[in-house]
Image 1: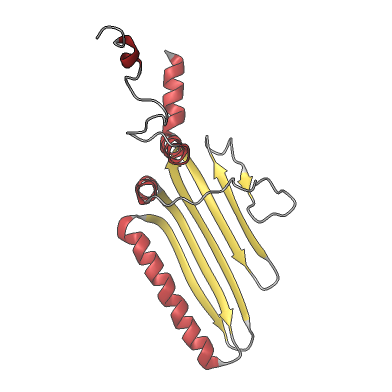
Image 2: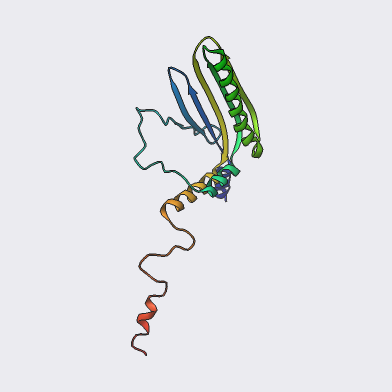
Length: 187
């Protein structure tokens, strides 16, 4: 009786994803950290780390199914979103136009997210420097999803890439092929 209760608790606990992206003139940093069981299990993924090349040729496949993306979007919740940009140009006119364009793009993206989701903490900022050319972007987003939904997503992805749809049959056999041989000599 204790094991099913523990399994249910583990399935209902949320998994927290922390997506961190930093772009500067001299460096690009991108990592994803995952936290489960209140931080007891927390691996980090560095997608662009050349030293730790764990990906195979076909390990990352693109997902084209709109239904799966809608399912993921319905099940996630945003805890924190930080998006800061420092930019600058020596030409003041160009800096002002780019400054307005960046604010416009950020406001459109945030309004699309906020139309369907709530974000607990939002920090968006654009700073402009007029006498130097630079571009620094800091993006940090914390997303939560329950383990049950992650397992369901993996099952859907496996079905999508390995087959197993609702009306899938084996290629060379019919459902009642053995019945023909039963009635051959009785006719």
